[in-house]
Amino acid sequence: AQSVTQLGSHVSVSEGALVLLRCNYSSSVPPYLFWYVQYPNQGLQLLLKYTTGATLVKGINGFEAEFKKSETSFHLTKPSAHMSDAAEYFCAVSSNSGYSTLTFGKGTMLLVSP
Amino acid sequence: KAGVTQTPRYLIKTRGQQVTLSCSPISGHRSVSWYQQTPGQGLQFLFEYFSETQRNKGNFPGRFSGRQFSNSRSEMNVSTLELGDSALYLCASNPGTGPVYEQYFGPGTRLTVT
Image 1 (cartoon, rainbow over the protein chains, first blue to last red):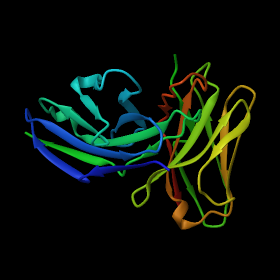
Image 2 (image 1 turned 45 degrees about the vertical axis):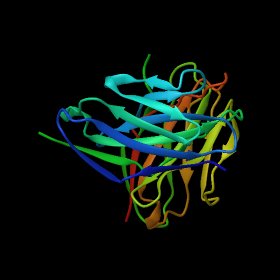
Image 3 (image 1 turned 90 degrees about the vertical axis):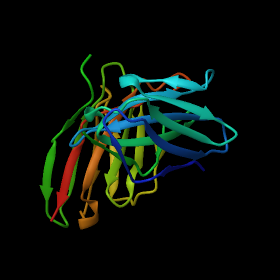
Image 4 (image 1 turned 60 degrees about the vertical axis):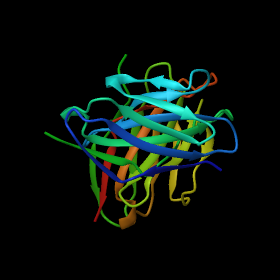
């Protein structure tokens, strides 16, 4: 069985500060890992994904994440927060078993203050 | 390409009634998945359809069902609605083949059960 833990249901940063959203996963098979963002009253938008290869993954809007197998982590970072980054962020894991089912974390609400 | 569309966007139903939600995937995508999003339980997988066949199913009661048509459009049905079924129902599509399954989400249908 797979699971995802996101540390912190809410994270507050100032505009221009570093954004760090934490994600740890559990998977019995090599995982595929994803970060999604959800703005109010909208669906989920893919920020970035890790499948194989380079462990540092760059996504849209300046976000990146690093896959660390030894720590079973896939933390999301952005060097400088913008007001428009305020949203809810979800980490998700999928397996390469042939199914496309995603297991999501509980989400982290990112609050950005001026 | 047009994105994933879901209809209706908002729905209010009474306890005991049934409801049908519709999802049109991205053109060419053969896999459609459904997720339920609630504040308490987060995002939970309902089921996935691929080429008109249910390929995977989450842990939901039999009141939740779905189907997929030959044009890949999908519907999900919830019978005998309960208050706890109030949620945002998200549909996601992907090509359905290949080693990596990147899900593309629709805006969701907000179901309120009174």
